[in-house]
Length: 467
Image 1 (tube, helix red, strand yellow):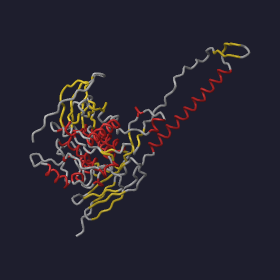
Image 2 (tube, rainbow, N blue to C red):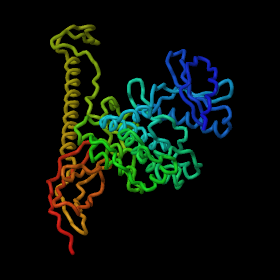
Image 3 (cartoon, rainbow, N blue to C red):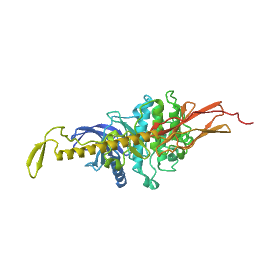
Image 4 (cartoon, rainbow, N blue to C red):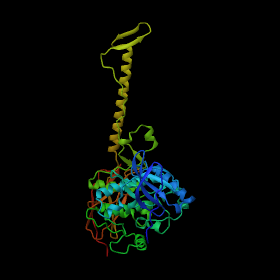
């Protein structure tokens, strides 16, 4: 099929056309130079032949969604939206020189970078979900790279709010990165399908191809859809990809939606656990704090980790007012109704102020000490698993344990014979052990994105099957 030529760039006041960036089914993207402030911007312009009331409303909805979400550091920034003189709506966005789709097929993305990208984009997706918005087109070509190398999620053109999904029409999908239930048109979109797309995207960065693409084989849409439906995800083929990461991606692309990570945040947590296992610096999950934090003066710059459904600020030293204190022994001027102006030291007013300042300082010290004690107790009180139990039956070995008091954002990290399994919230794990003689396991609680102390190692000699 012959690709169409891009439309003519519109004349936009305050902008000078530079070149064409790309073309799609409904819009073209052009590079312009904005006059004031002077900068390069990407301008997405709807095609004249597709503009009608419905499309115009969709485009306006995209502009509004992007504007609401683009303050997130991993979502493309939108500057403005309007309608050109020829009637075509347009969107002015941050210019990103490349997408990751242009890179991962040329050379594999390092494991550490793929993990970091996955955590950041999952943070963006989680942020959108908390605003009630599904992206519905997560894939490598929609992850752009800023001038500073930061990945950002773009193109919310087919996004839908969670409340509208039951009335949503079918939309075009990107087959290689779409969940099986989307391809079967069972649902127009869901949190679970977005988790599938996140997993498929990270897999693509590692493998240099989409998950169900066969090098040199039949990769038509129908063939890909059939393989996606069977959900037999092949290994990435890279020796430097740890088994734990392969398991995280397998879980995210499970055929049954309920067997995947329960949210984009949980997917990000699984990736963080792999970073922790590999000894990498953990990529922070970036999710907006509640209004409570803003109104209580929490320093957002010192926020490092997110747990559960809320951001947890880092312990910050309270800001102190910059008052100039009077040096000891200096003269103090005190006004008296009887004596006019008297200059001296150690006056009653001075002592009173000194007493007030001393009491205030003591209160601050006591408060800070209490906060420190609470922080230390909170750290020391992180839940941990005391012991593991084991049960064998029909070629399987089950380890289970008691819940030590898992928090909303916590998870278990199970290590089997030195290999970490994907993070989970279930208090048991079932293993196929038909070809194994002995299995050893430990369990750690991932709390605030960090793995705690492991449980005592439990080793089990595998019994021969009866008969």
